[in-house]
Image (spheres, rainbow, N blue to C red):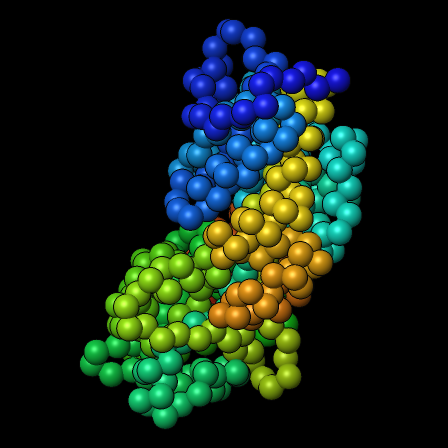
Length: 403
């Protein structure tokens, strides 16, 4: 039975006891939640829903957002000592490594089945055939374009790789580059590259395939031709956005969460289309982004209360509120269909999410090593230290040696 506190729930910072392991027993009237949503508007969107759901289930919610790259190592340390928060929000490709530690509860055992969620989204929330996470919202990538710059150049948004090369070249001059993408030495770079790797028929389990080499060669060609800046190897997705809003880039690969900044940029007319594919008729194949709510193992009483909180946070009401507030896509097709007409500038993302792929479906816990091999190869090829083929062959040899 869930113990109740006064109906007015308060969202406060997570106490040091959860993060540093003090000796005092957890307060039965408080649930702790950890995520990496330090940026707006997502942080405020989550705070609002945590406050609402805390009141609904009769618990006070203590919320701590930590910097993105600190969450995984911090949470893994806490997992080893069984001192994780009651609810842990993870980037979906991080779920397998946590589930493998056996620190997370299988959600069906707590009455959470994921009914009504996109099948591909549930696949990204599953490890070894068991559901361990539930996503309130998701996201993916598309191609943004500056409408004024395309009109001035007399070109249309590209649909194929051949058109992408030609359009990016036509949009490149002394003031701007035709296109930008994140080729950062990190997960963002690997995440973006998958949107070119997969549509060409390549498989993340075989990075040295001809199809993978062809995909990387496209990026190399864009950089070497001057259509994309060599600085893309240092740009994360936010830096790519900043180049776009400043008018120094005519097109960019980026996610729906960048839309608030674009809308607030004076004089910027923009549109968004699917990422170009290798040939006409080829379906886009982007990676599924977004976070999942997990319930670490604590005590039966706290786990039941955490399940109540997760059910509320993943409800249609919460999905809609967070999606609209932070420009994400609801994880439920029914909610997405209802909201789609309210966000006409983001319909491409709503249309793309059902076909987006999980980064861990084929690799499971080996995704982090593969991602690192991938971004290392991309960096090598774009900086000219090796060809696209040499870079990917080296990456695959390293993966084979480590397996």
